[in-house]
Length: 161
Image (cartoon, rainbow, N blue to C red; front, top):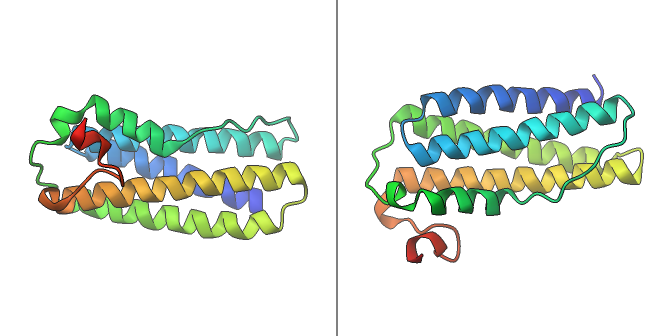
């Protein structure tokens, strides 16, 4: 299996897992977060499929952290209610963090082995997005695990308005 096939499998597995996690998550903002990241992973898979088919691919300038901040800002009132996450939900976030960590390591590796500058740019962009996904999952896990001692992202923008 070549690097593109491995990347496609990783993205497909992520789509499947995040779709199921969204379906099972009771917490509305957590559900929306899984749905938003699922859309990112579907876009990654589409780009990888185009690369495999030799089609011209367009690398969009996407910033997952900004997208999630927007989602959470829209759901601010729901977010600030005390939430007791189930152990299954917390486990889903742990698994998601591990999946993203593996994606990060994989894209770091294949970025150095890319056949062209365009491929290298693609893998660099996917690496950036996977790092953002990891940070989103980690932050959400921290929030659900200890709501009282949590502040959204670094600048507390959602809590302060």
